[in-house]
Length: 607
Image (cartoon, rainbow, N blue to C red; front, side, top):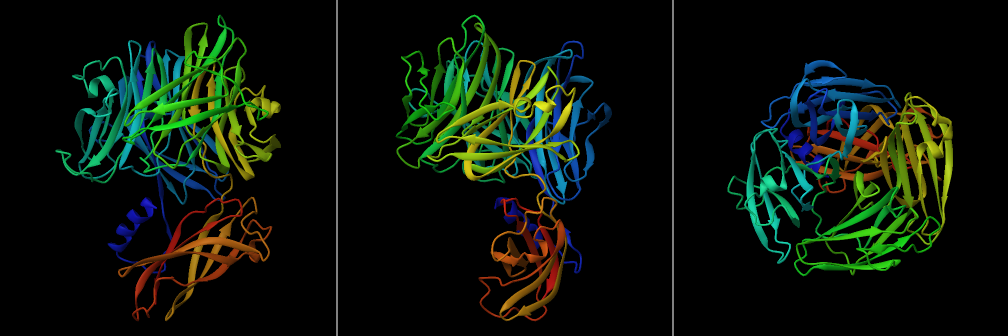
């Protein structure tokens, strides 16, 4: 809701122009991009991948900024240099854009503005030697700024942690970075970071806290908190964006960053772990990291299950294999568990059980080795239970693939439906995956859909959905390098509102009669008996705002790809008559029967 409240401030200070429909734009930000270097030696490339999962065409405006907040010039698909690029995609289309730079390695950040609705957007950073890929990472998109976060950071002779922070505001921003003592759980060092408007900073832990003893050999919590001034005496500011990167030798791994929760679910799910394999060949380990800001610490158990839902034994830090592992995280600190196995490579998922709804951030790093040589790493946060998702898919025969993993944390079997779309948005294949109770599946897309295994270059999207919740993750495989891919929390062909009309308003009781023109290509907007459509409606004016979830008669859209819905909205908290001539803006968005949200559309009205 943070984005909506920011929108209200803007609307309440704006002049109302009547009879003009407003399509509220959506912005997605990426706190780190990098390009440039020696074309014949070490260099960086950023890939931007977009799937328009709406039932209407969209336009995206890509803008890049450097450390000082100034626009950053790059080459988009070899064209430029330029600081922005506009891309239009028809409904269902997919596209990949390559960002390069002729010159020194340059880092910055990127924001993508979408109209009339957002789209699945993936960013992959590649570290290369000439054209040979050395490592790559996926950067998680951020829809909102955050006020605070905690990160598990680690350094040793070959390992470091980098942190990128962005100020998206037009005013100077301030962030307090603190390092917490791994022995006592107290703050051992802090630094106040000043960021210019649209500014960006990316530094390794050893650069942020260079004077801390043992900073080159440490495992500790790093906290980031927005603050009100350069003194950082009080929390405040307009929030920030952040991500972290783990550098292990020449292998980069994203450390996903999320807003600091006050607490969390008692049960947490990591939908993929892998360990074991021949000691002299390809083998894997999974490293679990647990971070807390609870001063008294946190404890819990980690139970591992295989594909059939049967408990799976793993060695924790070299101990005897066990299917259930206890762990303790001391107050304000980080704990690590390394899962390994025997000569057989095994995979499954992990259920974490905590004593209550306490603060804990759980993540996993998948490590792939050739003998004892680290080949690749990829990091994921715990996965919330979902009923649907969408993944950008790019495969190249023998060179690139996408893997997906599903975990069923329920005591009942679960069926997940998969739909594979090509780059033009057409379904080319559909199949179901059946998960037994506590079961697990991990497959490459080319295994799930073998008809694309031999394709020289396939671009598209994978839609996943089920009536019962599940946990999922996606990994991109490029040769022998793996990177995490985000899963958008919606499906393909979300409903699109193309117009709104308000033929009538009523002052007492306050009521808005509206008509909404809709496109819904997968024809699943209306459902139920009676046939209904869910929506959320708002009115915004100089007296404030009010909103409520409403139900609309959906008969006009039942099994149809387009039509007009009509309904009424009564603001629930407007208890007295509105003044004659009162001006406001009416906003509405729809939710289809699969839980996918439409674009957010408004129109000025008068009572």
